Amino acid sequence: MPGGSSLFSGFRVLALYSNHVPHALRFHKKHREFYLLTAAGKCFHTYNVNKLGIVSVSNSLSDDINVLAADRMLVFVAAGRLVSAFARNKEVVMCYHGHEQEVRLLLPLGDQLISADAGGDVIVWDVQGGYLPAAAL
Image (cartoon, rainbow, N blue to C red; front, side, top):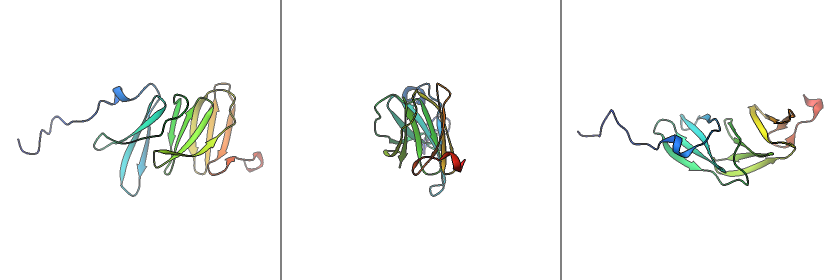
């Protein structure tokens, strides 16, 4: 059969390369494709959704990843009490320090990032510069 089978296609089984952390999905405007981000211990993998092929593996963090989130430019990852922003799915470009307990939720909203920890503390961050002053809220 020329061109291979239409019924079966080769790809990695995602369950073998991810954990319990929910995945994140992002759309790349220039490539006009969707990418799936999955946590795998202390790093995350990026897969092309159309081909289910791995595109990149991020640099490793000091702790296991708790939460993944993405916007149009950055991937946000919480590992323990630290939140990191990754560019190009690989390198850390910004770190957000301020939580006293493990971060459980990340929500990017435009130029802000909202994070919540296990103790119920919520912090609104300016993606470019860290804390967002309370007067700006």
